[in-house]
Length: 402
Image (tube, rainbow, N blue to C red; front, side, top):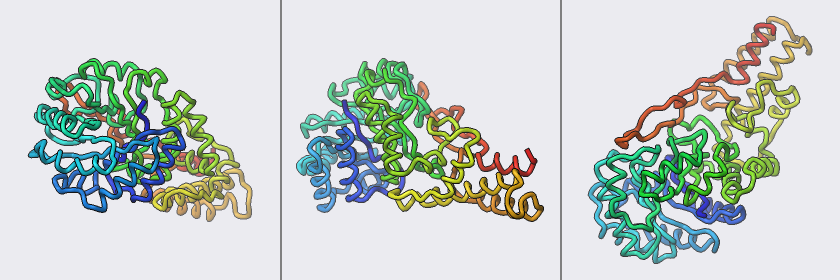
């Protein structure tokens, strides 16, 4: 079974050294696939027609040989005027430098009338390059058919794997039945699951996703051709979810694998503090005094530099709650004083103005969208929610005296 990651997020792409390190990580945890497809890589999307540079080809060669057990595929989003000859000319050097396949990425493009062209480009590559070709269709979410999908599969080479993100672009859960329905409208081909977790790009950028791979039925494994997780721009912070997802792909317990990983890294507190109420690692509606103090005192190491705003916010929020609980209990030197409550209010207001989401607070915005029977995006409930954070709840308890 294919299992690994597709570096397919919007945002700063990973460095070459980061990619090499993550391929080692995949190999160590039983993963077998890395896909180079970051949206902001210039010659992946915006400058798709330009030849890869000599440095890029050398990097592809290094990635492809980093671990014998991990295959490397190169993603490309061709423009509407692309020809098979252009793609073959551009991508052949990547294959000649050791890469193991090509991924044509037609996601997030307003070209629902281009299915026949997408099919022909995929067929041309698989025939001429004699390599794996996978395809991300423009209609990539949902379980309904559409004119686009009907045309895409009419004559598509039998060996082309077609990706799918689940019922939605971002999913709280995915069932075996979801995959069966998708298979039925895709020429009876089991989908290659592009699972948009733990990615936090675009409208999700205020959240940090450090949780386990969850709410994917075990029976789903038999209904897909593989699993590719889409990580965050923060590579190290993506590892807990990826390790958990790879365990799931092997039939092991995903939560146990996650719990072991974050415990070894010393990330249990920051993971819980950046969770949301429906997450399996949520700390609960009323964490203990000891837990809040442990978050206030934590010094997580090894996370990406870009994660520092969430570390600072969780520590600062925990300190606010510790102060609020002391005021509520009447302990300490100036507790229950008017001045103490004003100091708390100011600290709370400062914390609320921080530009990241922690302790389950909102508004939380995610692309919980699907493709309808015409292949167009359709809005679904859950895209925007606004839960109250644990910090807000504790501070208001203090102010109300309850």
